Length: 243
Length: 223
Image 1: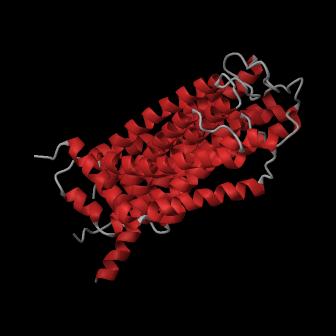
Image 2: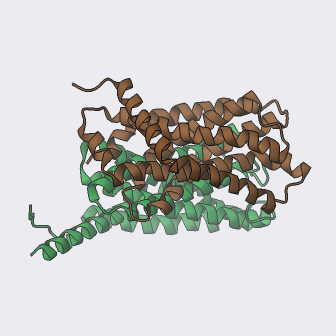
C-alpha cells in the first residue's frame, strides 16, 4: 500500500520547455501581426483587431474542453488517473480561454453594438458554457473520495461538452442572431461583420493555429504537472498521518 | 443470474411509492413549495392580464424545476443515508435498472406536482393551461429533466454541501429542457404555430439525455 511517491519536482521535460518558449514567441508574433501588420478595418477602426484574440480564444477553449471530454471517456474506459488529470487541466484552461472569449467579445460589442451584453443566442450559449465548467470545478472540489471524484467528473465532462457544441453550432441553427459569422455567409441581421480579406487572414490564421494547438497544450501540460505534484503531496500527507 | 430488468424497475418504483404513501414527505414538500412559488411570482412580477400571457409558461417551468430539485435531493439522500443504495448495488441487479427505477419514481412525483399545478394556475392566473398539448409538453419536459436530475443527484449526495451543489451542477446542464419547454408551452398558450417545433426539439433532447444517462449511470454508482 505504502507506495513511495516521488515528490521531488521532476525537471521539466525538454519538449515542454521548447513548447513554452514557442508559445510565448508565437503569442508575441501574433500580437505583432494583429496590431501592426493587419490593416485597420475601414468601418470599425482599431477595435476590430480584438477579433484576432476573440475568435482564436474560443477555439483554444474548444481544444481544452475537447481534452476534458476525451480524457473523461478514456478514464472511464481505462481507469488510468493520468486521463483524469488531463480532463481537469482541460476544464481549467478551457474556462480561462472561454472567459477571455467573453470579455474580448464584450469589449468589442460596446462600440459596435452599443452595448456590453445582449441576450443573443450565441452569447447566451457561451455564457452557459462558462457556467457549466465553473460548476464542473465546484463539483470537483466538493467530492472527497478520489476514485469517486474521477468517475463523477468524467461523466459530468461528457454532459458539459454538449454546451460547447451548442455554442459552436447554434449560430447555424437559430438564425435570429446578431453575432457575425466569419466562415461562410453571415446571418442577415448580423451587426458588425467584416470581410475575411487577405490582410485579415494573414493575421488570423497564425493566431488561430497558436490558440488551437500550442497555447492550450502548453498550459494544460503545466497544469497537469501541477496536479500530479498536488496529488503526490496529498498522498504524502496521508502517509505521514498514518505513521 | 440477475433479476429481470423490468421486475427490478417495478420493485424500485413500488418501494418509492410505498415509502411516499406512508411518509408523504416528498410530495407534500414539493407541492407546498410549488404553491408558494406561484404566489411569490404573482407578487414579484405584478402579473396583470397582459404580463401573465407572456410570463406564465416561465413561471410554470421555474416552479416545476425548483420543486423537482427539492424532490431529487431528498429521494437520493434517502437512498444513500439509509444505505439502501449500497444494498441495491450488492443485489444482482443491473445498474441501468436502478437508474430507471429511481428516474421513474422521480418523474412520477414531479409529474404529479406538474399535474396539480396546471389546474391551479388555470384558476389563479385565469389562463387555459388544461390543454392536452400543455399537459403533454409538461410531462415530456419533466421526464427529460428528471433523467439528468437523477444522475446528478446520485453524484451530489456524495459531496459536501449536497443541497447547494445539485442546483449548481444541474441547472446549467438542464437549460436545454427549460428553454425548449418554455417556448413550447408559450407557443401553445399564445396560439403560435411554432410550438410543435419546440416540442419536437424537447422530445429529441429528452431521448438523447435519457440514453446518455442510461449509459453513464453505471460509472456513477461504481465504487
